[in-house]
Length: 304
Image (cartoon, rainbow, N blue to C red; front, side, top):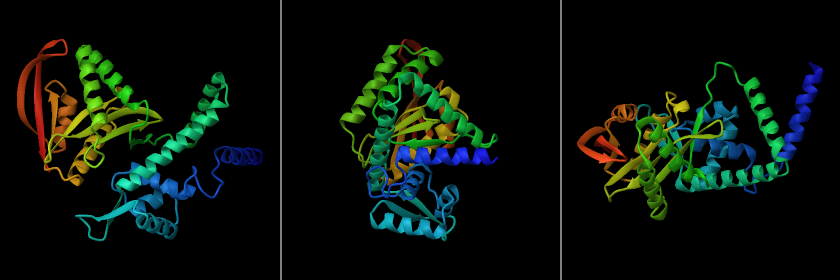
């Protein structure tokens, strides 16, 4: 046991030195490691409380309170009251807070990329495999690997278009014209993006993209939920429901009065999620598209 303890401590000293967490500020920012971890949790938890953050990070509540007061002073965090319990306060990043977190994640990607570039290509697989082994050994066997929601990064949008094309071809026999439609929607989102009224979320699990969704402006009062998708190996874990919840929450905060979406009658799992979230089918129209002549398009709506 003593030898194992020594090895673990040596590895901890080595790795923290490699990634620079012993410096006063993390990722060339004004924030410490603990503060950056709190920002990360706020970005990837749905309406957390301070108690949940403290428990998840094993932080002293007094220390966390000081961090949150600083974030509020800097305009990064907002608190809202619970409708069920007046004593409870939910935490959420403000638009400035999301921009700050996005910048930190981009810098983190840059630093990890620089670290990996020093490693020969064939050795990278050994390195990441060893990391997975450490994670698997230390994580309890009965715990589920969580997924997180984040803003898109370079490469994500092309991947989303590609996966839509591949999955809908495999599962519903849609041809290349469906992928072209997805590319058009994504391109329009980028070209006309209004961050105050439009948003994209990417779902990530074990470092891999497993789903995504968009909210786009249709009019001053109406937003559209678009391009919801979940990878087959991530289905049944609440990813789709969480993506829809984020769309509804954002649309309400942005001031929309209605959220609508366009889907197909044969997408039964997605239709079930929409119905469960409170959407109602408003219109059905048979059509011929994507190499199919037996499709029925549906419009679903949710009053906000």
